[in-house]
Length: 142
Image (cartoon, rainbow, N blue to C red; front, side):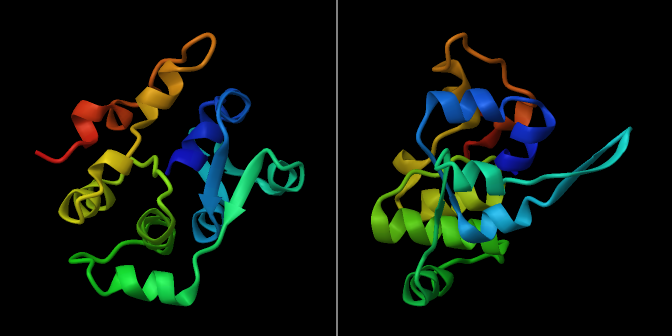
């Protein structure tokens, strides 16, 4: 998940400083912690939301139902709500989740997908991709 890796790899501040970032409510609530060799680390995004640096977006039940009915593979709540926001409101979606990117392609929405590497490349200074899964080459459906 982009939000988790942004905290874990230390680029959340740069990302929020360089872009207007919104997150589906379900995705934000899924980003509770990350694990590494040092153990389990909690994630608290509330200060960013309260300060208006991270905008929490909520899809309506009808927006979620409309997209859930056409998805061919079960996705997590964060991906489903994010896709609902893309379809219903024209938002863009930064994800490396292969199933979510394939769903965007099937729905004709691949132009609304933003690989993390593209966001990081626009920062000043540009940041490297923390994991190859976030490159366009790795995540884009064949």
